[in-house]
Length: 462
Ligand SMILES: [Zn+2]
Image (cartoon, rainbow, N blue to C red; front, side, top):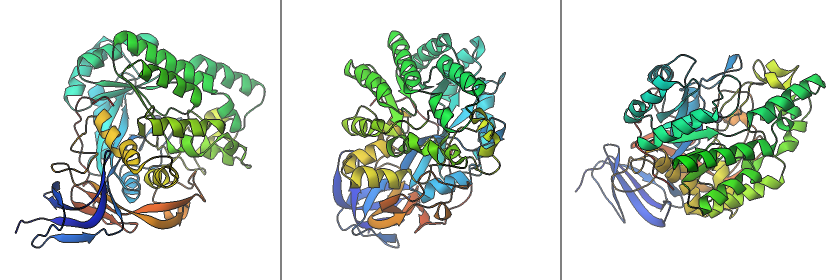
């Protein structure tokens, strides 16, 4: 009899292309067999009858322990990855942000110090380039070789923003060396004009944050980034695409077979701008960029996701406490730290409101939460699927559990969730990382520092 460490029995295995009843056998952290009635001496057995066996979630947009606007996002690599694990996510790709004057290597090292020895799930880093010059440009090939195969450029935000010449050069350099450029696409000048105008007019409440960042500002930058990428003949990934106007630009580019890809986030699929009207400064909970949009955008985004125009769902998890952090902006929305939590709720929300409600097939749910993120960011096929030879990163998911999302039950280190009161059908019950059970029935039983840094390869275009 073969020796296995773990056998998951009788579950329904779901991949991006398939759903089938199968046992899954694991040895030394790797999936080594799929099939019926697998038996093995001394193996730990999980009975997954009536449950789904999904690839572990991959969240390629998180900000743990990130400095922003005079404060720091409140989940570190320990608390944030525990929350991720409890929500069925086994890999994140966070952003190492280059400080002015830093090399890319120094930026990466700064983030390694935050994560190494602390993360409980596997992780990689994109490098956000904020201070480009000839040396930095020439450093990109080495960064790619060292496993930081994607870079983010901000088209907006004072202190982070880069101009179009930087975007163009970075696109060409990334393309020639097997890297990928990601953009935060918003038009700086429209937003800067509106923020200053509202401030002068005494319009200081959280809702003016949203009004200062209209959809046209995003769509303009999306369109411009696509055109510059098409000139460079380089692949492009648009982070947190939030509205129909941008989706139209994306869909048109993809119709022309341009290698443009995009993610959206649960907040843009499930929440809309009315949230900013919550009294007593509670609108600050939703101050993020891009902001929540008018309701009519939500269905367009679901459609785009189902049809394959949008390739991935990440969270942009960037939590700040209402008390002591968000309230820095009590007197002016421009001082509210931008960001909201979501690392723990993504899988349950996307399953419940996507797959369970029939907006996404089961396979598509897996594709946008795990398989495509793994492909686009150079982790496939060791991550993002259930197949012989892949890492045994697995979520046992009970489609019949009903829960109401509430802050007190979540592990995110922050004092609210934007999804308070959301009912979900289906929830992860066991999370497995490289063959080790790290979460069981909502309890984290893994180990601090068990997460491994992932050197990532060139993107696979999807
Ligand atoms: Zn972000």
